[in-house]
Image 1 (cartoon, rainbow, N blue to C red):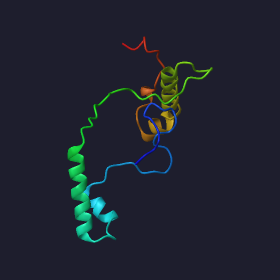
Image 2 (cartoon, rainbow, N blue to C red; image 1 turned 90 degrees about the horizontal axis):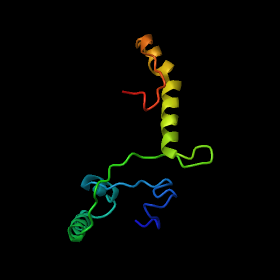
Image 3 (cartoon, rainbow, N blue to C red; image 1 turned 60 degrees about the vertical axis):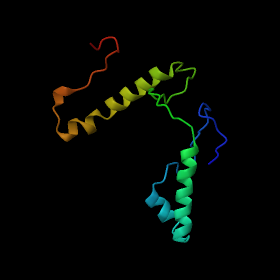
Image 4 (cartoon, rainbow, N blue to C red; image 1 turned 30 degrees about the vertical axis):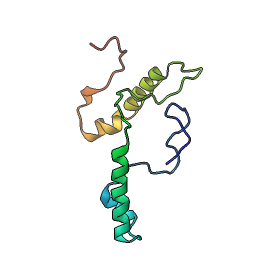
Length: 117
């Protein structure tokens, strides 16, 4: 499926209401149930043949996702993500921890990255 996008493009590469995934054989058979079985069998077989001819390699790249974009108020998007995460955790502490019966003396405290040892 063509998207006319590049993985480095800042726009939403996989945006919209599209469902992007690889189908298993059972799902393919279900989606193509309106076709004769022999046609579906041939399509599945041809897909396997085509895949065996591909030489593409996907190398994993382990990186932390960055959700924020640099702005005038927040020039460092990674630090802004950290702040948003901590703010969300602190804002929900009462309803997620205290109200569910966890000990009150386990209250969170905001610390700077350098003070955590």
